[in-house]
Amino acid sequence: MLEIVRDLEGRSRRERREIVSKWIEYFGLEYICEDYISFLGIGQNIIIPCKKEKRIAIGSHYDAVEGSPGANDNGSAVAVTLELARRLQDFDGEIGVTYFFFDQEEEGLIGSSSYLHLNKPKDILGLYNLELVGLGKNIALWPVKPDERGTLLQTFEEVAKNKGRYTFRFPQPVINTADHESFRRYGINDAFTITTITDEDLKLAPEFVNPDLSRREIQYVMQRSDVFRHYHQKTDKAKHLCEESLEMVTGLLYDSILAINSNPKKQEVVNVSV
Ligand SMILES: [Zn+2]
Image 1: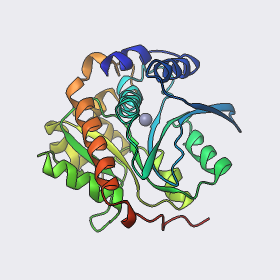
Image 2 (image 1 turned 90 degrees about the vertical axis):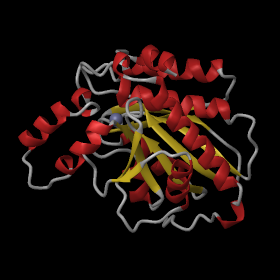
Image 3 (image 1 turned 30 degrees about the vertical axis):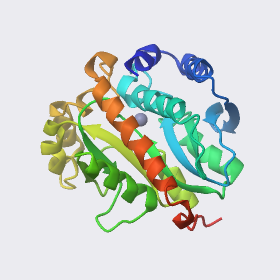
Image 4 (image 1 turned 180 degrees about the vertical axis):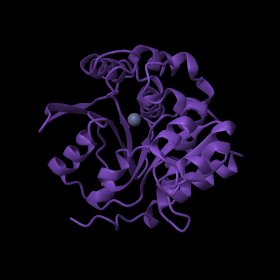
């Protein structure tokens, strides 16, 4: 999967879009390019659709912050989403999966909110959104409160626990928001973001979420963090990432989708308020 990240690294938005399409075609999958218009001009989401009555959404944005090569943010997530689509292409469960490569996340969640606004889907159970999944063996789930429940959330935690992996709920975003927010605003509440972090990052976690720290102090903490040191920087390159993290997240999502399908009758779409 690092090969895909390297492919995306340092490319323009248009080039990244072409690279995502190229890999989908290489894997023999069908996809849709959906244009939308926003106050920032025309954008384009890339979607690997599914025809099931109920579906799970997997989200990754393919755009990157200007000046950053965008390897971990968010080439890593694009690579995992592509690999998951490849591995599950012959899987025929009752609950399907739609894979999203959203545009313009960095400019205000524009791709994901446009998709929901244009399509008004009523068949999405929830969203596994991916951000920075290329480094570390611990998994941060955010924004997830201690008492929060949900099929996607609890299945993922259960699968991780059974595999001896650690997941940590972070009740609020560490630095920025992500595409899960568009889904929650739309009414799909079992929607959250998965990020991998190292043991060192985990030690710094209480400082990240400390509301008393100033922006400058948070920046100082970020510079000491393995993952966030490169966040939105020109150093966000594939050479800092590792295949094992990408593989871990892919495997956990794969098993979660199979686990949800093992009892599909229980999974109702109850949280859409449109
Ligand atoms: Zn991002």
